[in-house]
Length: 476
RNA sequence: UCCCCCAUAGCUCAGCUGGUUAGAGCGACUGACUGUUAAUCAGUAGGUCCCUGGUUCGAGUCCAGGUGGGGGAGCCA
Image 1 (tube, rainbow, N blue to C red):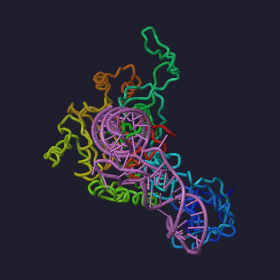
Image 2 (cartoon, rainbow, N blue to C red):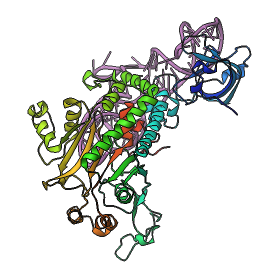
Image 3 (cartoon, rainbow, N blue to C red):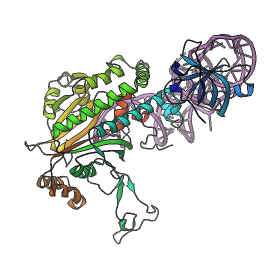
Image 4 (tube, chains in turn orange, red):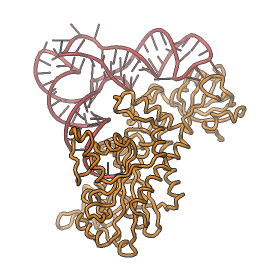
């Protein structure tokens, strides 16, 4: 069946033509006006029925949520709310939706309620807008790297690498948990497992991406990532998608430039191609913020915030400079911070928030952290105390990107493995890239859902991924 | 994992220092109206007050435990 998508019918270009449209009923007013959405855009199409020509049995089935298909002529609307409408000649209900049971009503629902209806929440304007935006953002990410000569590398999802230390891992096994094979010491004998050794779901594709970068030059991964941390926050998922570029011959400064350019590209893309969604989400945010006290609201609207990021240079400062700024700040002097601010301890959320939301009100890139609070693979600076690490912090979300220049010197990397208790035979393949033709290189990880949060103004990460995985929650 | 808050109709919520028949708005249903924009107007139905136990003459209300949800923290992206 040849169909027209609704997004192509809301302008007057096709007026006079006979059209076929299918979609889901939003409202049915006056036994005559059927508002239908097919997901092609936020816009609903108004189908105008001939009340007398439409059997009552059909009209009774035209309830919110029902799937319908209609044939008619596209005409200029006689009403005020829309440019065009369809004079329906024939309408068929493909799938009714019992109005007593269908949970999505033409009224505002709480995000908490819709989260429990994750299978149906796509039918709402908010979630359809979020997921169209999510699609556009992932397309823009691929577009950015492809245009810049990167190759996408599919790094493994099942991995035996346990060296990254990025978090607790999900074990993957085909052994029967009620009948585990044990060796003579009573320890599980993984030689009988599918891979002959213990394996996990990946917590990061970085180490493997580094291997690719040391031959292909510029690579990136964009795949699912799993953390079995018992994190119960609005910014963490057990299953999330991460973008991890890795570039040979880049230093830390190049790495920050890449992160900044990438963010600016994807936000510019959605500002150009998804303005309707962004305008809708900006309105939604405004409504939601009415419930909040004035000091908890965003200083700028959603679109203004995104433009600000695309048009201004990110603030760059070292960890040491950040500590100095924090120690000179009002909340520090008034002892408003709960956690100590001194060189050597990691910055807490409250400190990052102050820097990003109060001091600069802009994305901030913090660099050169103390070695002791960062990972083993980050490149040691000449001062011997800090490493060439970077975090990109954005208002409302905190850490959006974390990255570093990688340690390319074999002797130092081997020493770091010892300090971090990483057995060399677990990462022998990683170390060999430093043995054969080592070169400076750098990369970062960007949490895709956090990017979608930032771009959409949604405040809970569970509302920007179709089917969120969090502790005790894997329905659907 | 820790701290705080919450759980009452399909949804959002009210329900006072414990008191007799648990309410509102929206939605749904029935009817009226018919160029409506979350249509309007009138009416009707709809409740295991999250679960278990306790205190009390009496518990939606107080106490304990549990479950679920939210906000914040840690871990991080």
